[in-house]
Amino acid sequence: MIDLYSANTPNGKKISIMLEEIGFDYKVIKVDINNGEQFKDEFKKISPLSKIPVIIDHKNKKTVFESGAILIYLAELSGKFYNSEERLEINQWLMAQMGYVGPMLGQHHQFHHYNPGKSKFGEERYFKISKRIYKELDERLSKSKYLSGDNYTIADIGTFPWIARHEWHDIGLKSFKNLTRWYEEISKRDGVKKGFAFIDKNEFPPGPY
Picture 1 (cartoon, rainbow, N blue to C red):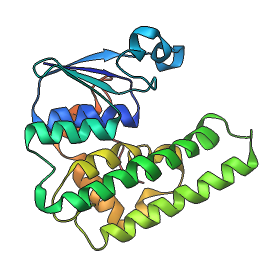
Picture 2: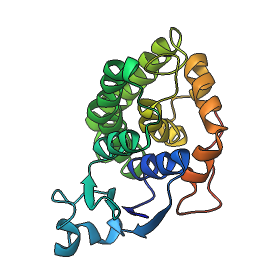
Picture 3: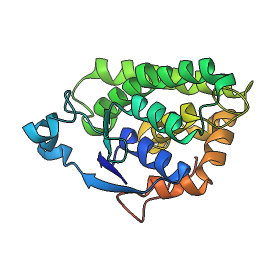
Picture 4: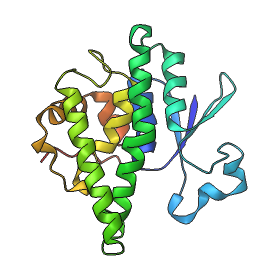
């Protein structure tokens, strides 16, 4: 049994999707990040930077924080979605998500979705960067079935929940045919649908438009 400390965010969904995809049993412990539960001393013992998600693997007596590190840990543990032949490519695209795609789209959420009208500079800057991310991912997926190559990997699992918030981005996912193809294919996977609904059982990945 794996304990998953998480919230209903793209980073949180990465891990629930991965756990569903590899078929591991897990228990969700909700962390109310809107009320600051992540800053409590008890949670900081397992997450020193006060971030979700975190997993505790009771069988192997391991605690892992940071979503990218958790994906790698679970991939190595299960032997899935992290094949040795593509590992360098997988790592690059996973790190691109961790260091660029997620943080920049997250800033776009802050300025465009949560706090519109607070900063014209912030809104314009992160809208422009987010549109560039869509274009760059679309270009990559015009040459490759998945982000790291021919196989579905943890790079795709890490990136998908961020694109699944395309409703918030107001960029128009359907304008990017290769990214849409990738998004629709991943949306149909049983593990993705189950993992996406790990907190709200009625939640499904929104269709592209």
